[in-house]
Image (cartoon, rainbow, N blue to C red; front, side):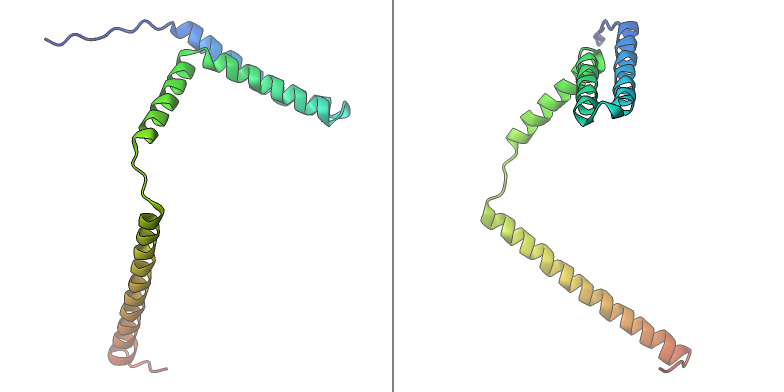
Length: 127
């Protein structure tokens, strides 16, 4: 029998933190527009401070911690990737371009053949 792992999550506190972060974003936007007579510096300062506070509150919640953990895992996985050398990348790019040209020629030839078949032979609509 498999054992299930139980996680204790304070859902109410996390919902309150997300609501507070949302309220801070809204307050930052309102402050940005209300401070239009104070000058651009005051507007942008209020916006940046409000958004930074919202991010800080969000990152203390469980979804915020999960987002940070996901980002760390993504960086760890990217470090495992073996990237191609410049020569390999150029060769692959050349293969892709060659394939695109061949496919374009094939589709053009197919289109013209079907045009000739339908319009000239079957329907008799000569240009």
